[in-house]
Image (cartoon, rainbow, N blue to C red; front, top):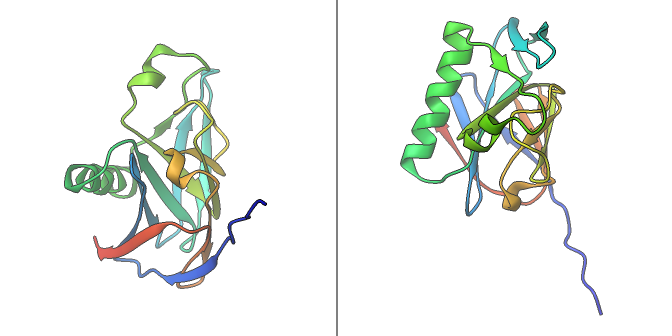
Length: 160
């Protein structure tokens, strides 16, 4: 006899000054709202620069491959660099040796799906993000005033 886990669909309120942390056993994800119309610059492995236009309810997600206070501080720092300093996102070519050394990766847009079966930092598509196995398969949608999470993660919401 086999059992299928029931995927929950939850709406979580997320203010412009809050960060949502999804927790796994070997990694975490931090999610914030863009809060205003902004541009994210993405450097591709082909030498191009792509501009991702975000609206206020779109998401910026940071996946980190560790847990705890230090991981959460790293997520906060990366969010600050992207939102306040316009730090670009860099996409590496597949099998690039630096990919194995990335401690965190970023994605942004109105929808993000977490996947543990991709190589960190090598996907220019902003709707997929490498994450730890516990968070793999979770989908996050930006909605007015919050997010909708498809999946069953442990999470908390904190002020930035």
